[in-house]
Image (cartoon, rainbow, N blue to C red):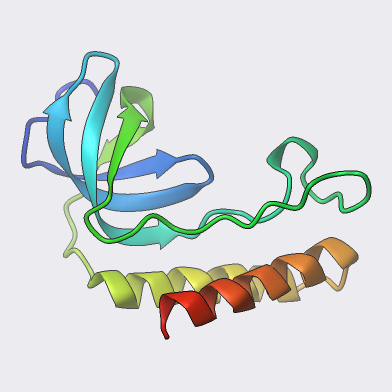
Length: 126
């Protein structure tokens, strides 16, 4: 999306998560976006060896925080016209969706990812 203006509400894919945010600044090839809600929680584990648990570092990835800023490639930014959900509700929903997907198949990777999500959920909602 090359035509966003400051103040526009957009959906942006950043690292392995997706967010709804407000465009703060055009930075040439990227936009500076302020996070307003979570659409998709970031994946857990080693993204370069996804699904692997042996011989890799299993990364725990947190979702970006409310009003945290991110520099997002313009190609990963799309218009968003629906109502922006509350940050906490959107985060809970994103975690629920990720958990449901991980529970579909019993594997060592999914078990580690679920444990990571459980730990993150406790940190998010203390």
